[in-house]
Length: 114
Length: 112
Image (cartoon, rainbow over all chains, first blue to last red; front, side, top):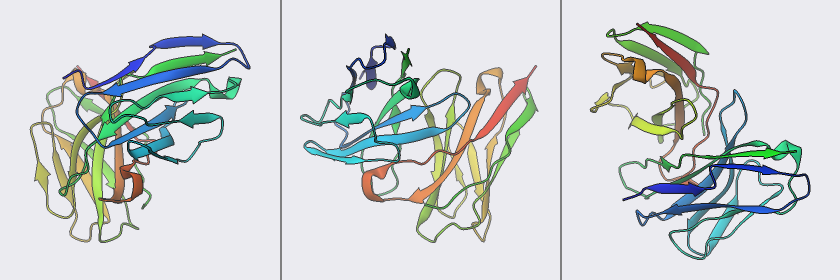
């Protein structure tokens, strides 16, 4: 299994540009989520999905859109990038287990908005 | 989900046990304690979790006090590769969205 994969690894955008961060998992996990991590800080939840066709907002959803058309993929869209969205973005996935869940994280996408 | 308090940073000598404390005095009866770590520039990695009993796996041990208001993650023989930020998280097992709330964590530096 490849686990959780994210593309691209690095991206530079100009203010106002749009782009999509890709996330895919091959573990048949129900749950997927997007976090952002700013320098020296912990992760903050942006959006999450509990299954195909179902998404919801996390702690910091403004400026981001998501969709979940398949179990495997959970893209994150920036419609009009702003310098405040400069961050490292992590995608994660997990099962929902009776004994407790663990999340598997991707390697991250480093985004710089100029 | 209950909040946690961890020291900002700790040092440990290579080969010695690393004991990372976490306070979660407002933890509820149905909240688990999870530990994750993040090695520089990588995604977080799950380590261990528990409810009230002590837990051990191939990576670490988790000691939870009887009143469940604090816990300690133990890396029995720390190596240089264990240098990372360690996050203590408490959450309900089946909360909506199954998501994690990360605080600042403890930056563990393992020294030769």
